[in-house]
Amino acid sequence: MIDLPKRFPAVMLATCPLPWTAAGQLEVDLFQRSVERQARELTASLYLFGTAGEGYAVTGAQFRQAVIAFQEALPAEAEPMVGVISLSLATMIERIEWTQARGIRDFQISLPAWGALTDREVASFFAEICGRFPDCRFLHYNLARTKRVLTGDDYARVAAAHPNLVAIKMGGEDTAAFEAILTRAPALQCFFTEFGYAAMRSRFECGLLVSISSVHWQNSRRFFAARGADRTMIEELRAIHGRLMAIVGHEAHMDGAYDKLFVKVHEPDFPLRLLPPYASTSDATFRSFRDSLPVAWRT
Image 1 (tube, rainbow, N blue to C red):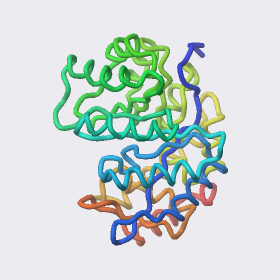
Image 2: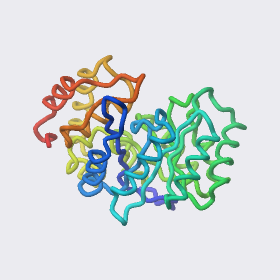
Image 3: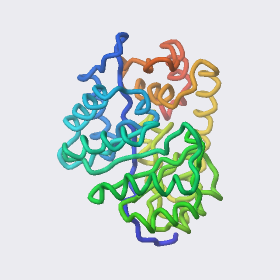
Image 4: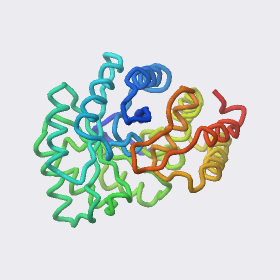
């Protein structure tokens, strides 16, 4: 294990998907119940409006309503994190300003996705956000949907310029890319989904970005606490992931479609619909996925 000073703790970080009615209204009571349960039974390190949380799709009014409901549902000791995703930097700044005024200081940001940012534009993006809000902490979601995946060298430059850039999160299993970031920008905490976390945790401090393991909260906590290669749990998770991909097939493709299946395991009345135009999965698909889970992963 390489002992590196970090700007953010190595916690379990989990998303809070939004339940929508057929009319596109937020089911506030159900949402708050699911947030409260996750905070109590999984982790208090929860975030709203990552890509799985449809942060790219909400209106200003929906954004504000969900943030208020999210903040009210969390325990007093929790530190809520709010994602801000937009093609418009000005819109991102407006939403951070409004959320900051409510006392929230942790934000998750992604690069604008209309076109791949150049090095100069990447520097400008972080200067406009991190530089404008020095008393806030920022986690950057590094993903291919933005058309620019940042490297270890990129993060070394940005982290040196902005001490309030405290963390990143990445999916997948590109361990070479992960290691480059961990070694070249050692102050940044890195959050990886289950397979990336399992590959890196024995040599580096890193956090778990809870994904497919969230179908069983107790097992997810056990997986987070394990060190070294827990082959049994990894093989079980790979099997679950393979079944999930086969069952969903071409029915849906957005992150939130999968995460809502995971939430519905714990909250059977949680609706699967995404805000249009994005396709969601069906209740029949959910039942097939739920029934495919190994006995040890059934809630």
